[in-house]
Length: 321
Image (tube, rainbow, N blue to C red; front, side, top):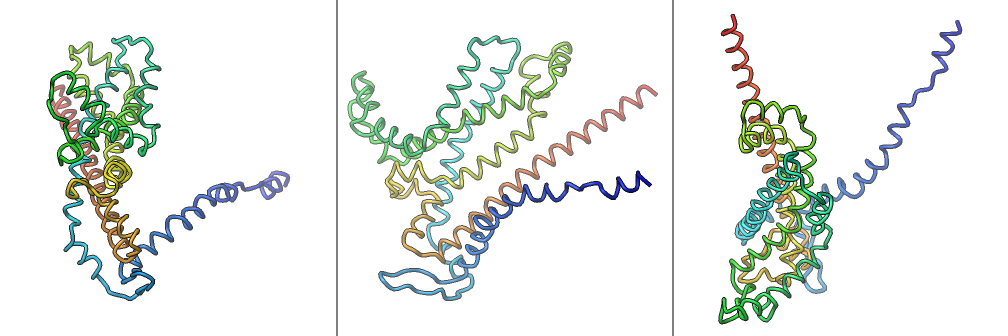
C-alpha cells in the first residue's frame, strides 16, 4: 500500500522542461517565423512608395519574381559567388594547415595559446572598422601605394578601388582575414577530439604526415568541415557590410562588387517591399538548395566509406576461412 501511495504522489518534472524552452519558441515565433511568413506574403504583392504616395499592397502573383530575373540579379549573384569563393578557398586551406600544425604532438610550439588568440583576434573586429582600415590603406594616396612607390616597385599609384580585380580582391582578403581564425579554432577542436591512438597506430604502420592527414584526420573531421562549408555558404550569400562600406553602397567599379544583399538593401531603402520580399525568398531558396547539396554530398561520402569498409571486412573473412 505504501509503495502505491508513493508512486501516486510522485512529481513529474516534464512540464518544467517545456517551461524552460518556451522562451526560445516564443522569441522564434515573434522575431523569425512571423516575419518570414510575412516576407513571403509580401513577395506576391505590388507594394512600394513613390514620393508621398504609397502603392499597394496589390496582389500581382509571380510578377515580382519575373521582374527580378529580368534585372541584374544573376550578375549580382555571380559577383557574390566570385568574392565568396576567392575568400573561402584560402580561408579553408590556411585554417587546415594551422589546425594540423597546432595539434601535431610532434611539433612543440611554445606560446600556443598566444598564437590561437592572435589568429582569432580579426574575428572580433567589426566589419565596418575593417572596411575603413582597408579603404585607408589601399586608397590612391594610402600607405600601401606610398611604400611601393618609395621602394621603386611602381611609378604610379595603383587604383585598387577603380579596378574590378582590385576591389574584389580587397573584399575577398577582408573576408579571409576576418574568418580564417574562427575556422582554424573549430578545426583544431575537431582534430583534438580524435583518439590519439589512431595517430599512433598509423605511425607504427609507417604512414607519413600526408597519409595520416588524408586517411585519418580528414575522414574524422568531415562533419565539422561540412558545418564550416554550410555556414560559410550562408555567410557568403549574406555578404553586405564589407562591400557596402568599401564602395559606399555603389558596388564600384561598374557594380562588379554589388552583392545580393546590397541589391536587397536598395529595394528596402526605396521602400519597394514587394521586390525585396521576392529577393529574400530567392536567397532563402538558394541557401536551402546549396546547404542540401553539401549535406547530401557528406552523407554519400560516409555511405561510400562504410560500404568500402564492409567489403574489405568480408574479403578478409573469406581469406581467413
